[in-house]
Amino acid sequence: MGSLDHGIPWQERVATKRQARADKIPAAWRIPDNYLDKFQTPLSEKKNNLIAAQAVRKSGILTEKELRITEDYTIAELLSALSSGTLTSVEVTLAYSKRAAVAQQLVNCLTETMFEEAKERAHQLDALREQGRLAGPLHGLPVSIKDNFHKKGTEATIGMVSFLGEVSKENSPLVEILLKLGAVIYVKTNVPQTMMTSDSDNNVFGRTLNPWNTSLGPGGSSGGEGALIALRGSPLGVGTDIGGSVRIPALCCGTYGFRPSAARIPNGGMRACTTSGMKFILSCAGPLSLDLDGIETFFKTIFDAQPAHYDSTILDIPWRQVSAKPILRIGIVPESPSFPLHPPVRRTLAEAARLLEAQGHTLIPLDIEECQILRANEIAWNIFSLDQGAMGHIQSSGEPPVPSLVYIGKIIEKLKASTKFTLPDLSELDRMGKLAYLNTCRAELRETYRKMWVRHELDICIAPPAQNTAVAHDMFAIAPYTTFLNCLDYPSCVIPFGKVGGSDAHKVFELKEDQTAPPYNFEQLEGAPCSIQVFTTTLRDEECLQMSKQIDQCLKSKV
Image (cartoon, rainbow, N blue to C red; front, side, top):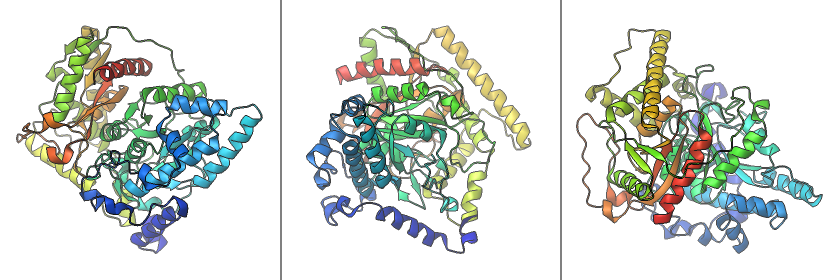
């Protein structure tokens, strides 16, 4: 395994891979050498808002029609135009391929590109439509996928040197389903080393930047997806989430992101750097998009394809048609004393609550002790630590751990030293003993939430998506407000809502000894997207989505 087996230093193997990736971008799609001179460089250290600057549009790579295709259509409108023949699959695929290529040159969000293969598939889909047939409900729609999905003929390195050179021999089940539905898979997107940090940086592909502010991170582990979608280089992306890895890029990049209940969306047949069989808190595949209708389209079409025929790891439960009540009972998850919120996050949640209450919804403040945010995270961290497979892959190849991984370790050690943890020292227990104890704690946590839900007759809850918005590279560290929902296995959705602005400028943020949070620097964070997170109980994904749409409309009506 790794560079020792290949006899080539890992740095050389990485350089070869990066060059091969660059070479797959056609010369006509490459931005001029001096194009970045108009921005503050290096991009990763300077504050550049590539979206406000219309960096993709002004690159001159896309035609006016291609800009309209990628900027003016929702997913529903794209599918309608593709179905009617108003737009061809070749036109749409070319537009998104070019836009993704420009996004890659700006923020380094891609790992694998399949532009030629995507063009060929688009021709086949157009020929099918000329015969009066559609391949499926996603006919001709470009869909981007996170690097850990296998796409036959490409690599799924997940940014790990030890997996370089391994070509996928078959598609992951979800990719197979998307293709059956008529989608065009054209790019794979960047992730952090080990896929267990909230940044998207690795030694193979390098660091992905946040298009709203290139000095900030895009979140992780599906950070390449978040950045690509924010730049409209993809209408619909698929990530995975075990501690927040769909929702964190959504909150950092100003998109919608949905983490479904475990084992509802096909998540089998994936590249992982964990030990086979060590699955306790399950990873979930979930969508990112710029609108919730697109996320609903993703779920409906996947479930209609009978995904259990493709993936034995999922629950064979059809998608249900539900409607939201006009007036909701909304629980408000309080700020955890251990994980204080940055001023913009606190303000955003308060404003969302005010708007919802003004529209007649009933808000129920939940008890800090009962919500047990710290304990839920302790349980999750201890469960994650039972598997050291990822670190074994790093060591085997000779590559060093990336800065964000090192920083998380330091934060955990700081918490251990300064925080009064709720769990006892488990070092005397063997792994099976630890697992049994942690599973018991997790069951007790879920029972506490069940009782709380029933007692308050809750429909949905609102929580911070994180302590912070996007922050400086490598500084996001832990993700307490998403990880606790993975521990509960509750479906949850991140809804963008506003930006860091002037009202946050003079707010003071100071940490106590037993608290942790990323640094707060208003000048650097100004303009970063803000958001809220909503969630329901396990397997109530349909209700969660419908109420998310209802809440989103409420917030939009007053923004």
